[in-house]
Image (cartoon, rainbow, N blue to C red; front, side, top):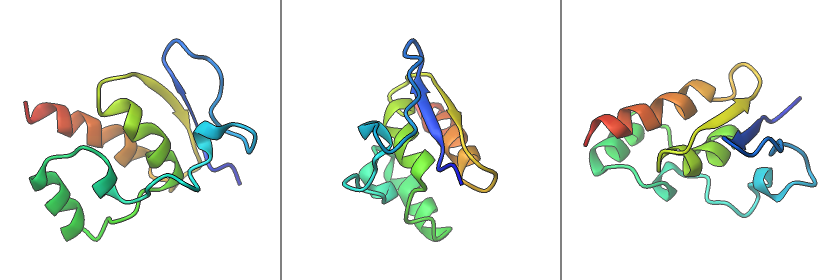
Length: 94
């Protein structure tokens, strides 16, 4: 099963694969608390019991929250919708 891939806009190198450190999230904090979200959004995520990020979220959110574009691919049920929508909602707070 593919854990997913994510490439920053302008960088067409896939981030998937065991040999690519960008998708090696073993030493990356997996909790949503590790990403710069508002206190209200963090509280909402906790209320939903969404405490840990999936691999595609951990790889993409640090890039997309500051406004970078990414192209990502991951299996159904991997958390792509949250990885896509969270930066959109985050941007609306300003």
